[in-house]
Amino acid sequence: MIKLEGVHKHFGHLQVLKEIDLQVATGEKLVVIGPSGSGKSTLIRCINLLEKPSYGRVIVDGVEITAHKAPVHKVRQSIGMVFQQFNLYPHKTVLENLTLAPTLIRKVSREEAESTGMRYLERVGLKEKAGAYPSQLSGGQQQRVAIARALNMHPKIMLFDEPTSALDPEMIKEVLDVMIDLAHEGITMVVVTHEMSFAKEVGDRVIFMDEGVILEDGPPEHFFNNPTQERTKAFLSRILR
Amino acid sequence: MVGPFAWFKWEALLKDGNVFIEGFGITALVAVLALGVALALGVIFGMLGASHWKFAKRASRCYVEFIQNTPLVIQVFFLYNGLPKIGIVLPVLWVGVIGVGVYHGAYIAEVIRAGIQAIPKGQREAALSQGFNYWEAMRYIILPQAQRIVFPPLTNQAVFLIKNTSVMAMVAGGDLMYRADSWSSGNIYYGPAYVVTGLLYFILCFPLAQLARHLERRAEVSA
Image (cartoon, rainbow over all chains, first blue to last red):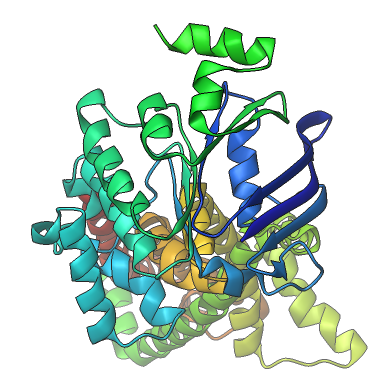
């Protein structure tokens, strides 16, 4: 479903990703862990080309999106993304946030976009907020709306870039619960997170990144119980008490 | 000794009131047309200036810097005296419309660029991640949000623009300022002429300035 081949990314002299090779199978739940500055956000942003690799190839659903004149906008329609800062459209109501892209980009009828939108809002527990504006919602609510907004495009892949890092502790669970619920479906998920419980519970596979390279790659049990690299052990000892 | 505001001078002005009313009409017409030119140029160059294409940014920069750093009077003289030398003779009304429009287009471009750049980059990223292309993201996500920021300074620009149409007086433009100048230089009744002219500009500008204040307050409330 997702394939990265020899992906490099540098910003000026700073090497953020070094020769990354990665495959994510259809339906797989991949969790990306690593200290800040390890390149994990850049990695996930390369998957929908919000960040353009300096070189290397990115192939999504059989389309090489790094190719010259690749149909990037088309491919992005099937990749939902959830950001750390929610990035809801503040000038639109909650329901409009959900229907804007489906009606304008996917050319779905307004009625249909609204009815599927309401279903997703119900699923994230915010049906009664359909007419509210994002600024009237708490952070946790905004992030749940952001997930519903992404889902209303009926994506094959969902990318989560530190979805709970900007949230107050008491709101993290409500967002994670929605993500766990989503993980029980067949959708392919790539999640950059610091939530180790989430990695353990829903991750099919965990990769650990540091300084732009993937140091560990395997099932969560392997990662948490038998890490091979010293740096992984040091990282785990710092975050798991 | 006859004062500058002697009664008979006001009477003379009232008698020739048509001169001022015609000038007022031309000033208003030039202002509206120039505002159209300025808005079109400002939106285009403002968007280019906020874009990520090097060439577009540079083109926008050149336009803005060149226009902002030379006097409007010289730009208008160029249109009026310079262009005919290469065979382009513009009616004086269009000298005013183009001169003032191009001049304020540069300022409006800066207002629009700043407004676009004030929108967090996460908004553009969210739109792109959903499959919007650059122009769609601009149209549906960025510009509607930038609009609120941009309206108050834009309205102020409209006020400046109206006052700056008075530059046409220097090229016999037939506008309000020109009428006041030529009428009063004939009979040296400067006092009433300039007081009335000032009031007429005030009538055009004051409502706009009020609108700017109103929009500003509303933007603050909703921010």
